[in-house]
Image 1 (cartoon, rainbow, N blue to C red):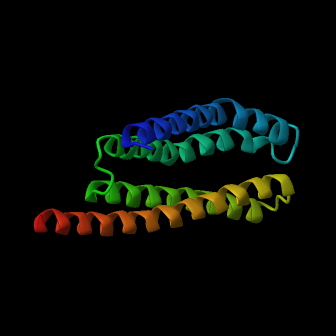
Image 2 (image 1 turned 180 degrees about the vertical axis):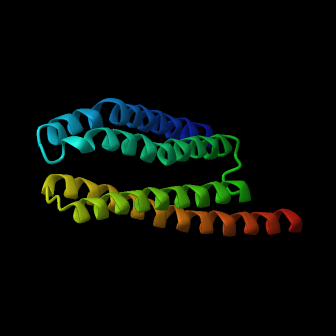
Length: 159
């Protein structure tokens, strides 16, 4: 697969992720909140903080998509292994970890509040799991891209 073709496919995936993220933040999560939180008298007061929380956690997600778009543009230009891309991957890793910390806070709030709704806890744990996995892998990729960039610079100097 050529650089331009790979870049195009990756950008298409990013667009679909962005559309899903907008759909999730603007429709799916608020509807889920209405059904789960507004139906329960004890959790009714959590609906508006829940919607605000979803939009706050969407910020790192959309910033990561933007950085991923920039990485794809560099791949399309044949500049995949650059220090700039390594830094972008590092930022995506940090953003994913911030996402994880936000969801840990939500879990702690639910435990302190005494809510044991297993479906809410399982969704939060699943999101937390993915945030940690993404953070680990983007951190590893950042390190690999940095090393590849250094090797590329060394090779460019010896030719």
